[in-house]
Every structure is written in C-alpha cells, then in structure tokens.
Image 1 (cartoon, rainbow, N blue to C red):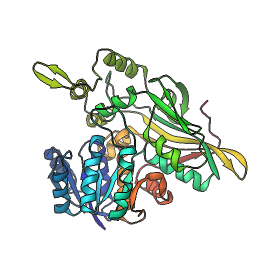
Image 2: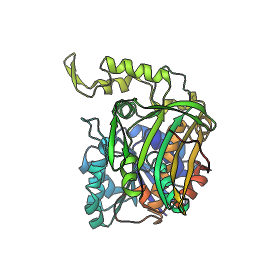
Image 3: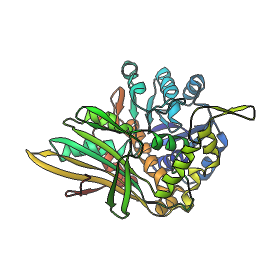
Image 4: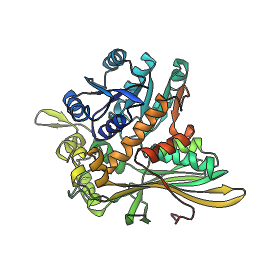
Length: 400
C-alpha cells in the first residue's frame, strides 16, 4: 500500500512500529527516524526478520525543520507518524507542510518552557493544511484518541445528543518501583502537577491539582482512587460533540505515587525553570527524568491491567440514556506480544490505526482535524482486529 515515516523510537513508537510490521499489507515500507539512530537500528534488527515490510532507519533532530524536510524529501513517505516529544509537533507539521505530506500525532503541542498544553497552536495550521491538500490527524493515541473515537461512535450509534462525558483512565498495573512513570517522565509529571480543569456550560472550570477525587470500581481492576485532571481531548470534544453540557477527565493514582510526587514538588525537582548547577544550566525536571526508570524498561516488571473508557449521558428518542465504552488491556500480554507495557501499547496501537486510516484513504479531509471529526466505524473495527477490543455497558455506574 505505501510508506510511513515514524519519528521517534521510544516506548510508544516501538509498539506502533511492531504493529505496522504486523500490518505489512498496508505499511509496505517503514522508515524509523530518531535523534539516536542506534535505537532505530536495534529495533530494525529485532523486527526485520518477522515481517515482509521493508524497514530502514535514519538520524534526525526533530527540533530542526530543515533536517526534517530533507529526510521527508529523501524518504518520500505517504504519511509522517509523529511519535517524538510534544514540543516538536510544530516543527514536524512545518516540514509536512513544506513537503505536502500527511501528518499524524498522538499528543498536542506544548512549549518546552511553559507547562501548558492546548490545541490552539496546531489549530492555527488549519487553513495552511487545507490549501496544501493534506490531512493532519491530531491525537491518535488512546486519550486523546480512542476516547474521541468512542465519543463519535456513541453519538453516531447510541444517542441523538450527548450531554455529559466522563473519561476514566485507570492503570491497575504494578511495576514494583517506589516511583516511576508509565510514559515520558517529563511529560507525565508536567501533566499531573498542573491545575485541573473541566468543561461545563460553555466554559472552563479550573481546580487545584488533585483537588477533586472520586472512587470507581473498574472491571477487572477493582476499586481505585481517581483524580480530575485537565486533558486535551476535553478541548476538542467540547467543540465537536453537539449538546455537551459537561466533560471531565479522571486518572487513577496510587498513594505512593502521590506521596513521592508531592515530595519532589516540595524540593523543586518538578520545576521547568532552569537553574545553575556547578557552572552549568540544568532544568530540574529534565534531570529528574534522567534518574527515573525509563518507561520502556517497565514492560517485563509490570503486572495487572488498564481500563480506559468513556461514560456518556444524553438522550435517544427523547429519553435519558447512559452508555459506557471502554477497553481492558493486560500489561503482561502486551509484553509477550510487543515487549512493552500496556500504557505504551494502548497509545501505540491507535497511532498505527490512525496512520492506516490516512494511508488507505478511509479518512481523507484536507486540513487539521481531531480524531472525533472522522467516521468512527472503521477505526472501531480496527481496534478489535489489532489488539484493543472494546466493550460496552448500557447500564453503567455513574460518577457523581
């Protein structure tokens, strides 16, 4: 079918690359590019005997548009799958614009020097991508990503209008470390230490970090504490799902994680403000990232399951209705299949599927679009086929 250029070679990228290799009738050629080309080479060596896809590697600094443009022109991919850092979204989008190449990512842009993430920077590219005749698919991970597809599916098949969405992200896995993050520590800690917010009656309501706590009994995981966070898909769903009155996002955290995080905050280790240390300027959070366990190393240690989904409330044929769409993923099964834990798996699989939707032309809409703006049905079918089967509950327990 075609060629994908995957930028990044961390835990999520490794899963997406494994899945592209499994799906070689679509991804006939795969180029893996990263600042550290040795990581790309090691993954190529591991995979090239397992797939009919042709795998190549390249070195690129995704901070530099000229390097990206040169690589895209050399490789001539049908789609660029951005699995680098969120700080690099805009440089990669610029390169895709210059080369008129389709673009897919899993997380929205955030500036490196400000702990803030929102879609405004990427939405500003809408007209440019339209004029170039290329598609940018934003947020093709799980949350954002599958949660948006779930919302579009619920609206298409189960509701006339959706009034309330609660997104619940539960990781019931145990990696055995006193403190570690399941994805990039720098991004993870910035996200969870920021103020929370939710969308209600047409405006944002801001909360203090971890101020709002609820308990929920998750299928195959059990009762967990979860906390309200700001999350980017709230921003796009509030625009794209008609009838919305409130959208909230909750994520589970254990007490050990929260205690360690509070201690690190109190001593300044989560700060993104540069400081001088022995004559060199360092960012405390980046130093902390360097000493924490690499999320890619957690796979063989992690046991348990994740449960991520959306609870919807709305109306169908004039009657009130509730509906819950979710996925349960087993850490150990993920490791057996692709050598990664379930948090990376639940992001990497939808990344491959999003690229497949663009590659095959099932989703083709020039401009910059969030995932819920497309027909959800082929994506939902692909989730069942490629390792993230979804479940539904027509009488779910609601979150108060």
